[in-house]
Length: 315
Image (cartoon, rainbow, N blue to C red):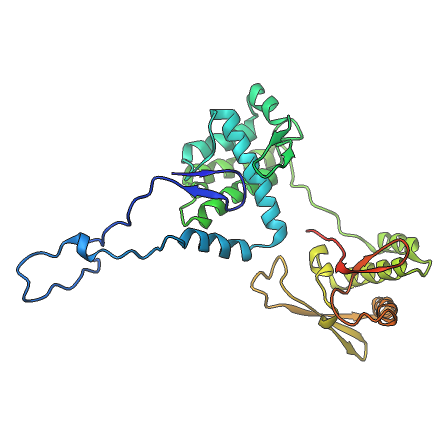
């Protein structure tokens, strides 16, 4: 059993002894016995400890480094919610692996509605071991289906990090979720989708940064670059000056790791027309300040001073 404190990968493995001996079942590899041996090999003598004491720590580190920062933060929030729900419901910390029955109960609670006492317990501030104080559940009633599925994904990630099978893949949980989707669709509930910015919205935003200050130049370049590239906020603010190449039409920009390209194959997007002109004006301002490398869209103070760090961006 493993006990969780609610943080991404922050778990403690409990009650595990020595690794199991090599299987001697039919069809499995067996240690070769010497033809001169007159006795059956002792499994204790032939067992191999494939996992070292640091395997869990190394696995968690690789999972952490291979997960986008925004996803890690979302997982941490969702793990804390799981911890709060489990403690409010059962009076004890969340344990990993979590039984399928508990996951099924979680889904039912968040589709059909939580008991009043648990709803009330989750609506007050909780303190966490790292000093964070937060309210686990800010809105009363069942959450959106996307929120429920994200919390299940966070639980699955916690199990995968530890090399354990996820209870969210059990047929009972999957069937319950499928029926929930069908029921909400029949009731006319549709997933909420963010509307993409249209040209009229873009022009209204550009009107707010037409004064010519450093902040205006940066914002104008950022808005037009984002509209032209179709990139997410996190992708746009991650662009470095070294990722830009001058072309006859304007610029070519290399986008690296993205939400849909976690392997980092990357893609190159053209920047032309008004977007190229705005980008060029911002690059000229950076060059005049002696900035030739690092984040393209970096923080700018109200007095026009440029910081070394990039602008913030999530999603």
